[in-house]
Length: 348
Image (cartoon, rainbow, N blue to C red):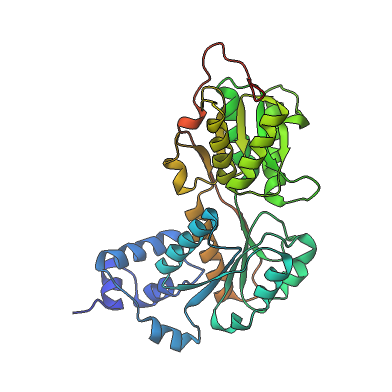
């Protein structure tokens, strides 16, 4: 016999109406109520009749996720987290990889299939604060993921870039490193996450009583392995002295680590490395990469919950801006330097 909503109500101790509100993502519920009903749903294995529910509500039961691409590990793992968070709320996800560039982002927001989804989670890279009114005018419920502030005009979920970068840099300094390289900011082009992570790096340096040295801030255009590898080859040629790297994402760190190891440097004995993103592959690199975990599951859940709130409440609701937490994952790439070892000289 199939499990019914009446069974969930009986096990949870709530009314059928309350259970229905939880299943339909009603925003005005206490967290403990939502959790108790969800526990009963999980215990019984209840699956709502989505077709009937969507027919009654006039909704599709589908949300959109606009991201730059699925070939970049961070966005692939983000998409997985959003799909799991949506499934827990009885929703399917239509993923739209759009590539890079402002025109691609604008085209996606105006896309012809907007009518197919109840709302959109949009990972922004190129739109900035002046585009706030443009985003506000999108006629589909919208939640933005990203580090650019849109002056409170749209719902936005962001990660703890400054605090995370500061924690990663402080960890390197606490291990005895003295010349920590920041890899890789964006010279002449304000990219919000790069700007914020550089601010966190600088805060850690100055809080330790050291002088912020622009020579230790290395700029690169690509936040992929090739960008980290190319930057490190150039640094090896230039002979810059450093004993640690705080990389602005994990793929930069992995590319730099590959080149350093090929050049004979021992990690972490000669150079300690910390990345940012906690990609799954960082657990299996050699050595395993220390990194800042931006709590992707928390980001995804906050985005889905906020979007459902917007779908239920409409445009009159106040906008929400939520910054999620982070944790420092200490692994083998950032162990203490050997006794008596100074800064590695990449000219060696």
